[in-house]
Image (cartoon, rainbow, N blue to C red; front, top):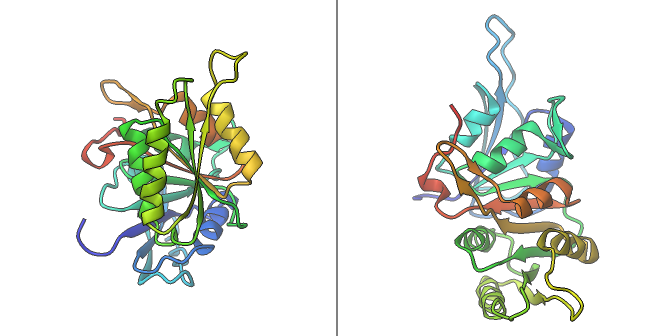
Amino acid sequence: MPGRPTLVLCDDRSPGAHDARAWILSHPWTGWDAVTMLVRADAPGGAPEADPEPLVGAAFDRATAGVLVGDPRRVLAARHEDDLLVVGARGTARHQVAHLGKVPEHLAHAAREPLVVARRPVHGGPVLVCVDGSAHAGAAVDAVTGLPWLAGTRAIVLSIDSGDRSLVPVAERTGEHLARAGADVEVLVVVPDELDLTVNPRWSILDTVARTNADLVALGTRGVAGLERFWIGSVASAVLRHAPCSVLVARDGQRHESHVDD
């Protein structure tokens, strides 16, 4: 897209949104614009909602804020011209899905932009980038590579191999790609031991997150296209729900398709 890259924070004034703001402000976003958006349900005759605070203090070139009226899931899922959408893991809604709020759960299925579900500010851990050779994982790698603070950051490329070592070249190429962007890269390929037939990708990822104390884990979605839904894969869903850190998810071609429910 032309112009400066843009980050959008969904701020519903919940503790989760506070965590998302803290995560953003833990990084320098030089060269980026920021939009802080409060999306509220339509309440005719209600008092006007005050604009949320702009994201000031993270080296954004331009930081603005505003209020939109509508279902937050639909409003945010319909956006398609931004470079990164950031939400808190839990919002104000009572309905929660295994430690994930209703809005981020929906956006993980339907967002047309790379999405970060933020859980805590940065504490010095690495970025864990999960690759499996799919185009969706490639989209997540591209999103991470575009982060303006990646240079000098420790990045671990994680691949869960089936045992034939076919993903080793994929992981190594990804490491080279991140290194060209300035990251301090380590490549880790997990393979089954001689007593196992397979490795469980979701638990291998979550174990690596815990062991490395990662700040952010990035992975692609593996969706099955239906008539109007694009369902997030089981691995990405499990990581989103159970990882203690922030999670970035992306899918190939998401800016060119709309998966918002009617």
